[in-house]
Image 1: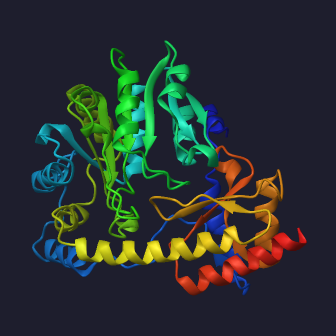
Image 2 (image 1 turned 180 degrees about the vertical axis):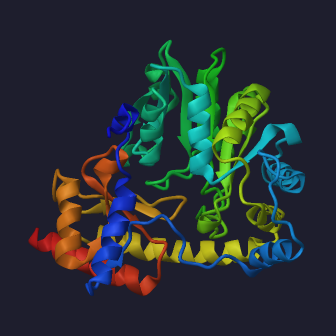
Length: 389
């Protein structure tokens, strides 16, 4: 039996592979500290769990419409209006099994063979893989420490070709924590005026933002951007609902919504019903106190970790404005991030993700979504490893 050729386009997730290897070594009795997974170490807030239990006890366990129940869709609409001043209708929303699922659906319905999707690099490992699987071409615009890992309007203008179908933005970013300001998004929007380019705005980390900064959604910077933007979001990171699998899109582009419902209807149908009910209090802001507590702890960890990494000779780290990752520069230490990370795990029992996996050699991603004691212990091991590397 032969596996379909389309699978050859798809590379395994490096983050998942390293996380799995770390767990395997830990099961063997090794003292492993893992900073590879993008998962908050906090539990889902009680108010959300209670909403799911209530739904189960009330027998709300049947199929729903493919795009989600009205109550949850309305909660999404209210959230987007409250947080960003955006006006959506029920027919503008589709709920999927996590933002990763939303993105896969979008690429499948938008991309024809050879269509280009422009995205800043470094970027989440899933973006280019899903584009390639959909017969598209990922076009990576390189960024680095000097630009705080953000593209400029001028870079975008140069990257656009007649084949450009979409611009994929992720703010706050995985893996860098970069956050685009309102002015930067306005400048990007001006470049797109007069084109048919769709903006796919992944805003999964919008609630995890630091230094008192204000998050700006791509769709809110102008009427033109609102009309061309598909906002992708969910609850995995903000309220520690990773395992619940809840993501959604919002867009006034009815053609996209209808196509997504049609596609999802033949692949997964609805998101599990209990999760949809559990999401309502989170979307209504009833878990905001829990979010604030998590964010404050993340910020404290960030500050301690950045200071510790920048004290290591040959290592530097830009202070991330959002998410819970550091993208650590090790170019003075090595030009092979995969080999570096493999040896670090084997010799010191520390799991981090090589920068090459995100399209940027000479870095590694360090997740500080874990306890402070482990972070400090892990960085000490990394320092020891680098000194002898």
